Image 1: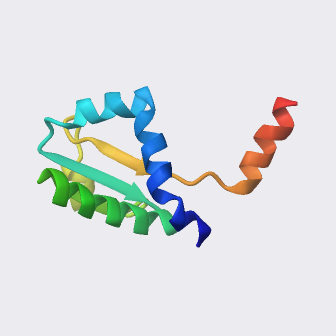
Image 2 (image 1 turned 90 degrees about the vertical axis):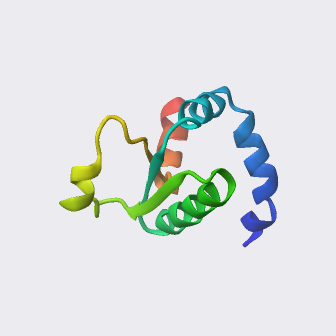
Length: 101
């Protein structure tokens, strides 16, 4: 819950990154966008898709990763931007810390 109190500041920090600015410029002229998330990140993808629709009027959908099969998979091509929202598990973060020392 304490993370929710910091979400505004965290968003501001993310938007400062040059890579994020480049992605925004790349996506600004798109007609559609697809967000993928799994587990808790599926809820994040749903909320992000709603915000993108509200703010930019861009067609945006969120799907649970692992679900885009058959019909949805057929609609995905190199012209459709796809964003995967991933969470790094704490064990992986610890592994990176151990390996970097």
